[in-house]
Image (cartoon, rainbow, N blue to C red; front, side):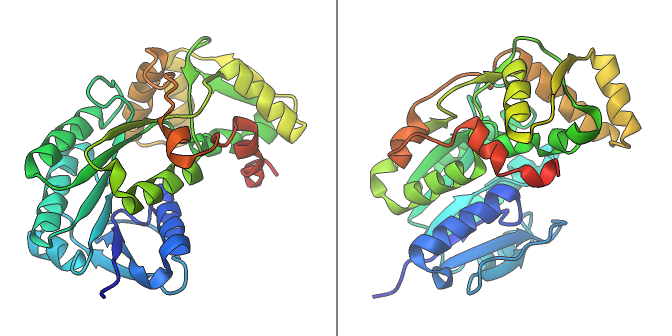
Length: 290
């Protein structure tokens, strides 16, 4: 009997690398394909035995070839907003041609109503996927706790966490928990046809985040509220490209409107355990403030 092959697109991303690791641990590295887009700028060292395929996600024959032999697909989107839907459509089309038996699409929290960058593109892709008839599950991942890394690197020097809101809450979850959930969903057919909202068990605000960072690092950290203009100046000083500044401002608009503060039980139910608390995730990021 032929062994089932699991493929992961955008495998060089932080989430993709963790998903590859989780699948390799469960099913053996020889049964995992790590798919990297030809335009990706990433350093990727997969677990020994995992096969890596480089493909053009915008070219049909290349995508079809990359997914050859795959029977389970974790579709993690990639690329700029203006091309993401086209890339996703191409990969979904390639999955249909290759007769993929189970597909999990990594979307964004509350995609159909989110103000986050890529929210519209995720919602469109969800609709495309539903129209294909592919056996699929949609994973609406919330905010990754590890997104805090960039802010944590400045903590030893500034002892400050910057925020554009004094009240906004974020129900973040660890990358490892979300990747473990993706691996479990691809393994168990009971999840097919479902759409999951995946968040942390609790939502924190930035005052609570500053307290948690203080407790973990021993560095007295305070929160400072910035205006959009001050935040933009800060990013310009760090040589952040204008396109990334725009995404950051749109993300903050989404956060202040509460898009990432909703707590859902789906992640805990899939994992069969509470997910990783904020402080435990911060402890795993000590490389940021040493």
